[in-house]
Image (cartoon, rainbow, N blue to C red):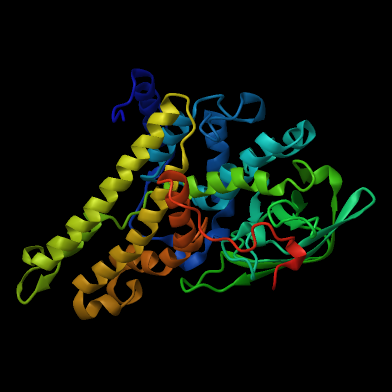
Amino acid sequence: MDFNDTPEEAAFRAEVRDWLAANAVLRSDTTEKLAVGLSANLDKARAFQRKKVEAGFSVITMSRAFGGRGGTAIQQVIYLQEEARYDNCGVAEIFGVGLGMCLPTILHNGTDAQRDRYLGPGISGDEIWCQLFSEPSGGSDVAGARTSAARDGDDWIVNGQKIWTSGAHYSDFGIITTRTDPTARKHRGMTMFIVDMKSPGIEVRPIRQLSNTSEFNEVFFTDVRVPDANRLGALNDGWNVALSTLMHERVSIGARSETLDWRRLLDIARAQEIDGRPATEDARVGDQIVDAWLVEFGAQLTSFRGQTALSRGEAPGPEQSILKMLKAPMLQQNAYRAMEMAGEAGVLTHIEVGDDWDDVIASLLLSPGIRIAGGSDEILRNIVAERVLGLPQDVRLDKDVPFNEIPV
């Protein structure tokens, strides 16, 4: 692994830092979306996204013809690292699914007409995207999709339900996995489509979260017409198309820079006392902070491995699943640690003790969802075990069974 920027990468990092310093403000410790929700930031997010496009910092790896920079994957990583220190008006959350998952899927699997139609407006922020994969009966098993699509002339009739769809209530378009051949094996009878979220027959029901916002949704499809021109990839090849989307999703989630890290725990410990002495002198607190540092450092080394591959023009491997497997549970554990250090006051919210406690509450309430999004802990452990460590595959009793013969 190479921990240092090349001269070209260092020059690009300096360019990014200069631009952010002139066009963004440093991120505060408070989490505004807890109070108002992401949808309240749509106008601000669109304005900042347009600035990024004009400067060539949005979807850096895409060609200039579609609003990108025509740059390298390592440049995209460098930009995200630097932007993590700034308030981006919710751009990462509002446009992240489209820019990081949906649009790359269209770029690599779509037709020329689809790329010409959707990439430009999606990159500029004029159109927002969502990802319609998870279903109530499927969990993290994307291949368990039961939402059906039946051919009707030049259209497909879609019926079914998706759940945990981030941003569906303000999205213009989505990519959806459907079951087009129920007699085929579960991984062979799926097809992916682009769906207009304003189509008749689509009902979006926001789900109230612990954080008092509603960024996830249930989405119901009743006889929704989708043109065959909106099909992504070949008929019944939706699983392979979905795989590319899932890898983008897991890398994106694993690469998030969370504020409640070991440094924040150390700051909290310095402000607390245990038995009349500074909390930093308590061995148990020291062990917790060191453990948080070790996990974060291990994740950083894994991230460097992927960045080194990108810098050399190679594709990161399944090791990137380790990032999310480490960082999402760490965020939740650090929230518990912070609350324990605060003693009785730890059970209070930022409303009672002030905005300095807001990041702890945000991490406590949001981290369980992060541990599920993009593949649960158990799914990621299977990926690492089978594809990284080379261990025997998990038993899959439904592997060669026609989908319509799998018990519900």
